[in-house]
Length: 141
Image (tube, rainbow, N blue to C red; front, side, top):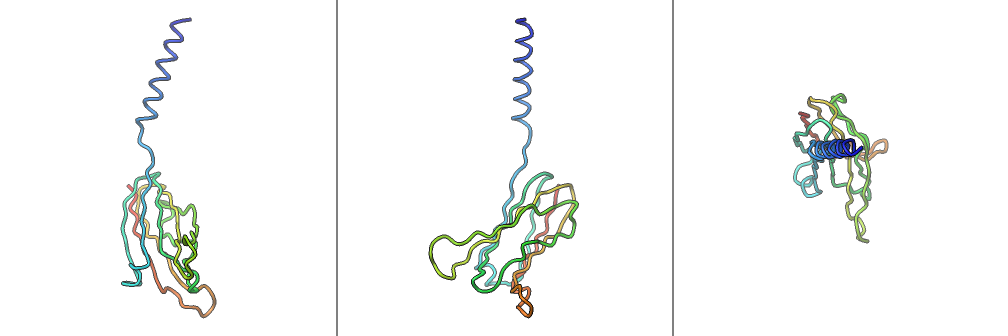
């Protein structure tokens, strides 16, 4: 009986060590503020992530101007990267016309490269299209 208790304790200790020492998925963040877009309307960025990592892209957004980012990002290789979520975060405080944040979350699925494109437009017919664009090249290793 005592030997089995010792063996169970050893096995549990080894299992916990292996779990704690194993690499976990990481979070990569890309953020672009309004000032960056006032300098250049069309921005490109590159990032490298590992398989199973998540990636968050946060872009300035001000729907009070009639413009908004498309909720679904265009991903040219959906075998290596998928969009998990989109949300708009309103600005803090009571400043009229203050910009908020458009936030997309992606997951790296397998090794490869994907180009993610986002467009800031007026969504109605006849509205201005592609006032701002953001292109992100994601390399998954």
